[in-house]
Amino acid sequence: MKTKLSSHFYRKEFACKCGCGGDTVDVELLRVLDQLRMRWMAPVIITSGYRCAAHNAKVGGAPDSQHLVGKAADIAVRGISAETIADYLDDQYPGRYGIGRYPTWTHIDVREREARW
Picture (spheres, rainbow, N blue to C red):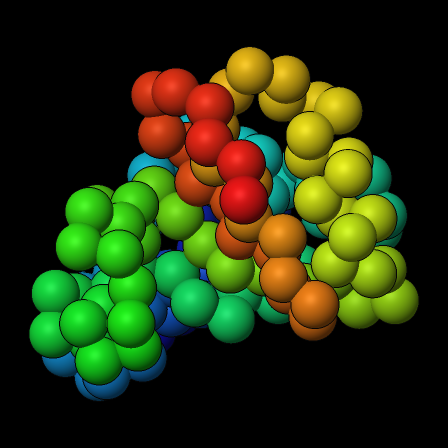
């Protein structure tokens, strides 16, 4: 059964890629991602959502990664560059959240403070 979390996302999209069954998702992260979906009217692809500690270590994630608590997602939006997505998030959330810029994807997390890389 597919569990729908919001207008545009299902729980399985956030599941740990190792197959452990972990799939925690923060409601604020869903709100941000739904806003992105509506901004471009295009699918937001979750390339990495929740990560268990073992999978996080395997992929080289930070020991205190927001992925470990379901507050982060690595994303791509069909037809929109990663740079454009990161710029938009930066404009929308000055002084808030974590935004990471990568060549083909963008990291967004809803941590309590600002972080940029």
